[in-house]
Amino acid sequence: MILQLNPMIPITRKSDGMKGYAFLVIDYSQEHYILFVCGMDNGDIWALTNKDISMQNNPSLERFINNKTKDNGKE
Image 1: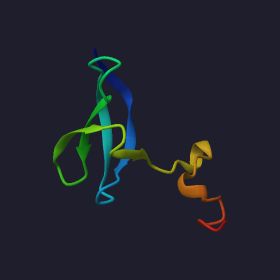
Image 2: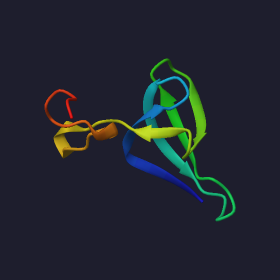
Image 3: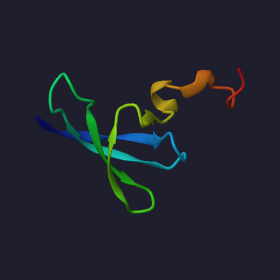
């Protein structure tokens, strides 16, 4: 199954911290990782597994990754 994400999801690649946007999801079956097709900020397009990426912070939705709070990342 292929699903277009609208809106795209801002992501960070865990291996090097590069930011980008996931715009497609490919799901082969329950026996495989979900693949996210991501356009990275340097122009590359990668198919990354769900264990290779994480969502970015979104202060508008009060979503802070790595236990960061609204006080400039202070815990």
